[in-house]
Image (cartoon, rainbow, N blue to C red; front, top):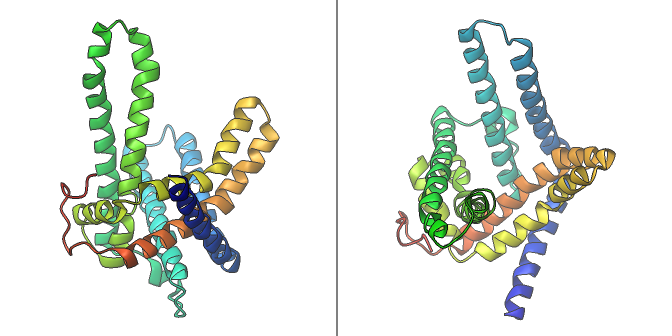
Length: 263
């Protein structure tokens, strides 16, 4: 078991170090995309407050515009990260990284599908935990401690297994369901490795939350900037490297089923 954990940690560290090297060599382009995401998110929040009394249809139109720009930039960042991780010499230019309409729709549907899964798991856990009330557990304890913890663990597992669906959309043009199936198939047997990588790249965010909770506001703001312009582009490169490595090792079929790859 100890050798297994050492091997997992070594592979995770290798991925992160490779990602750092790629990020350092291409920081301007990746950080520039993250800056555009940052501006888009904050500008939409500002306009939502500033245009609070504006016509409802205008607000809906602006919402659609900002959502389209934000999600499109996310796909551009992912496609750019994959391109850099493959170390392809050909430069596509910004327009070459833009997603097609079908890719954008499949991506948004994938996000909605994950939200639906989260909602179903949230309700299902209440049903499964209901017998605890008859065993003497306090209602408040079940609602505020046991239910959130177990739901969070399950959703983390689902997130790890399904988080690669955007890569199959932008790389292969698969639809949402097929991309989810491939993500499940590709991540089968790699959960511990992915969990280790997620913990490493999320360390800065964990520190930010911790310093904010302890009242170190200046340190928390510094870590927030690091998260926005270092960790986020690093995560994109890390996920791209992991995707490429797992695809090279993938030995499954051309149309994997869900039931064969759940566990």
